[in-house]
Image (cartoon, rainbow, N blue to C red; front, side):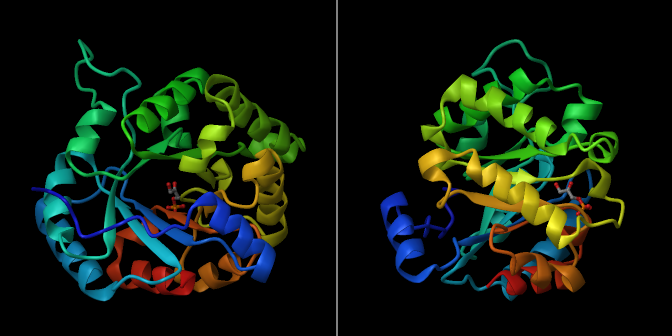
Length: 271
Ligand code: 13P
């Protein structure tokens, strides 16, 4: 009943590897709007109508919107027949049970969510989600047949002390240790430097590319096929420059996803 017209268009891993070898083509781009705790039924209806009318799909880019939980069904209905895909902002790591206020991955699958953001720095910091919990959530999302978008990123302090790659390595390794690396063929990574989120400061192309390249190098045989998004004050005016970088495959947007024109301009920059 809630099925959208969206079909996963990403080529299989083997095809991607062939593609990148043959033509050095970039991976399929992905733009994800994380609405965080914003919106109302009224505001969402206007925003979604504009986005659904303005994004017609692209052969090389996917667009996902992650509204707050109470609006998932309304968003799903508003996006029916459009090329925009539904995602969620977090999930509980358990399958079911006495976890008041929590939502399981199978519940998100019931509502036709395709992607789930895992380990966002706001949840790591404000909800005290541990690295291990993030790994368990990652596993729960995959078990339910959805695609986790695993966020990693360093604090300003880590960056200033030159420890950014160490932090990112720790955040990735705990998931690798929990699930193995081979399951990353159904995963997306996102680099979100904490100091760039919601601050108006964006990582420089050199800073972003250094980390994306490092993250890719940790993925072994999946290095060439995994999509790695950048998040942190991406706007229409800086998106094109970021998307042009070899190891950036799209963006995870906060503020810019709440404005239809800004959001659509970024989606078009990813095409
Ligand atoms: P901003 O785009 O508002 O900096 O937020 C980024 C983010 O946290 C997306 O998940």
